[in-house]
Image (cartoon, rainbow, N blue to C red):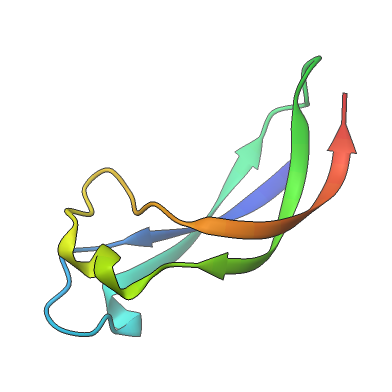
Length: 71
């Protein structure tokens, strides 16, 4: 089974984000179904103005990724 590393935000930012405001967890991924892809993030982009957004639903961002597997 493949596992994914997931960065999550613990709480709203106060000023500049600090490492202790994030948590890194791992979650198991189910096997791919037809039409799905598995990617590996190489670069993540989180622009500074995202600090103004509520983080309860996650943060928007962009990434450059490598395709690991596709069905």
